[in-house]
Length: 63
Image (cartoon, rainbow, N blue to C red; front, side):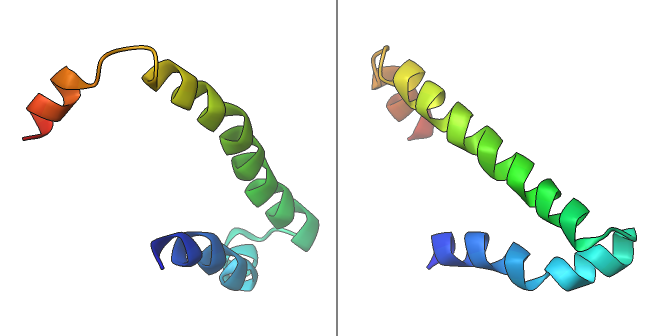
């Protein structure tokens, strides 16, 4: 549910964001596209880096 809310809400709010910022639909679409493309590139890198070390310290710190 959280994933659907996080990905669906900006699309529903696009007309409001466009009006508030004075953007065209193309500019507002590019704004969301840049965010999605950056996550497409960064998430695999973050996942690979997180698998390189032991998880013991973060688990202990979280408890």
